[in-house]
Length: 317
Image (cartoon, rainbow, N blue to C red):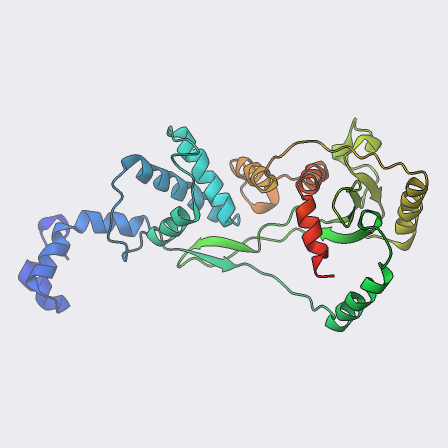
């Protein structure tokens, strides 16, 4: 109504919109600021402005990057956004001590730009509680008389290594879409003794005997035992063969296991990989994660499981 200063007077604006003349005058005085906030999707409930111009620059660059990813659309989780903020801060001269992209920073950032955290899709599976209770009672009897170092537990899990996050940060009025979800998966079998002092090499099962990314790689030198079948599932034959091998090793007392002292944070490594891929990717499907990447992360994850964590996992028994 008042563009180019040729619109209605303050009195006329106040009468038209049923507000006081002082409110109308204040809006006119702050028109540029309010328009800038609107165009950048700023939350109008946030009154305090950032005093540190460099910190404000971090937020602006991170928000610009965030909107680019959502336009593709690539799901953006909280750890991904925080890691991107750390990278931007480092480029502006901050150190890990002066800017940490903490959960507090993320909360303020989300409030400032009206960003929500929503579920893209997901499903849950029911667990047979009666079976769990029955085996909890039976295990104490079965394990009676065995040394804790000689008790081993193995369990398998599915790893959808190319799946995007089930949740994403989105603009408050944005429809939450994340593109088609990848169904590529691996089966991972992990085994350790009760005290956590012995962790066996992970077993990873895929569909291909030699994936393309294994070119010039000897599978026996991988940090995991690589197996394959057309479904990438654990089968009775595969499990039996693995069990016979482990039983033979136990009988021969071949119990020397060597682990790297690498203490890389696995989540950060995955997040950095995704951020690097986002630069060129136009959709989530174009973020390249190979079976070999997944194997490296499985190995690092297993290395970083501590004895204390494994012991705590058995404590309930």
